Each structure stands twice: as structure tokens, then as C-alpha cells.
Amino acid sequence: MSVVVIGDRKAGKTSMVRSLAEYGKYVKVDDSDSLVKELYNPETKFIAGTDEVQQRPLVMNIDMPATGVRQIRVLWIDTPGEFWSNQQQRNEYFHAWQALEEKVRSSKAVILLLPPHQTLVLQERLNHTPTHLKPVEPLPTAEQWVNRLQWWLNFFEERCKRVKHILIAIHKADLFCNVKSEAKRWQYKPEQGGTSPWFEYNEYVLDTYFSVASKDIKKYKASEVGSRTNFFITTTEDQGLLELPWLYLGPYIAYT
Image (cartoon, one colour):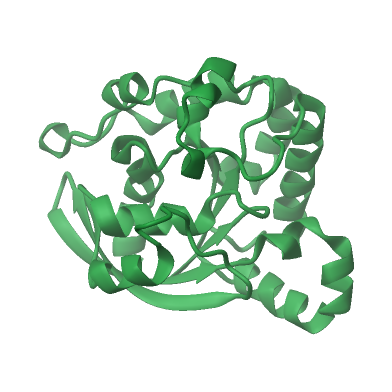
């Protein structure tokens, strides 16, 4: 099964997998040491960017409530952000873009990472954020963010009709909420059957963090593809939140 991690430039696609490999609790990656060394500079704490489509088979161990730890094999496909946000690059590398689109269309699951928008971010948190965690590029305004999200929703409806699971996450949640509090509220409890009901979590995240795009999302959710889409907040600064998308996918991957 392939899980494609997509998103615009510097959205945090590579850092998500690096953090899972380094600090995973309920979602652990085999051969994590070599993966971390390849993706991460411990001196600067900066993540290596993705310049081309990269495929890597990963063995992931996911602790699931009904069966305990299950080992699953995932073809992780990491993608360069510029392909998604730069029309000129898609035109110049048309065949590469077509190949990337096909990988996304034929995958079983897609995880889209979005940056937070300016009105969502708390300036006080941003001021106290370590340098390596600060946004490299200016965050989009709320209007820009909604317009970009609409582009992604259109892409999913038009090009991802065969994808079984689409997960959309606002990444870098440490910039806009108390991640410890949120993680505690929705923490995964395998001994109690897992996390809180996914529907409840999904509705909470939509109402709290995706509200600026509520009209667009409501319309999208009424579509066939939209009905297979779930929403999350993630951050490399708290494994509880970072692992939730993968814990959601775990049972589907393991039994497919």
C-alpha cells in the first residue's frame, strides 16, 4: 500500500516522517536511525528539503487496540512542494508531473499537510518559537489559505476518485494551540479501545481550526471523495497529535 504525503513547499512533509522515525510511541518505524540521519541535521536541527519525488519502503509498527502491535509495509512517497504550488514548474516538467499525479491517484491514502494561516497563529507563540521551527516563508493570509485549500479540494474531487482515504492536516499546530492540552484531550489509549471517536475528533477540528473555510468544506464533504476525507492538526512537537493520522489509517492499511 502507498501513502503519499503531499503539500506545498516547506509545509513539513519530510519532518513528519523524520519525527515519527525518531520519537514514535504508538507508530514506530523500523531502521529509524538511518532514516533520521538521512533526513535531519542534528547540529542545525533543519530538515533536508525534497527536491524530487522520493519513494521509500517503510516498515511501520502500529499499536492498534483490537490486535496490539501490527507490522505494516508502506511505500512512503514524498513529493517536492514546488510541483504543487508552481504552475510553471508543472508545465516545464510535464511528464514528471504526470507521473506524480498518477502515483497520487493510484495510492490508497493521501496525507495533505497545510501551513497555518496568519489569523490562526498566536503571535506570542511565534515569538517564543525556536528558530528551526519558525516558518521559513511568510504564512498565508486567511483569504489566501482558503483559496489554496479550495485548489486542493478541487484536485481531490477531480483526480483522486480512486483514493480510499484522504487526510488533511494543518501542520505546525504548536504555532496556534496548546498542543499538550489538545493531545491529552484526544490521546490514543490502546488499552481502552483507542482514541476518542474519530467522528467527534473530526468535527471538533473542523469547527475549531478549519472554520474560515467552513462553507467550502461543507460543500466538498457532500461529494463522494469528500465523504472519505478526515481532518487533523499535527505537529512534530507532540507525538500524540502527530501520530493520530497514522493511527487512523493503521487498521485500513493492516487489513487491506
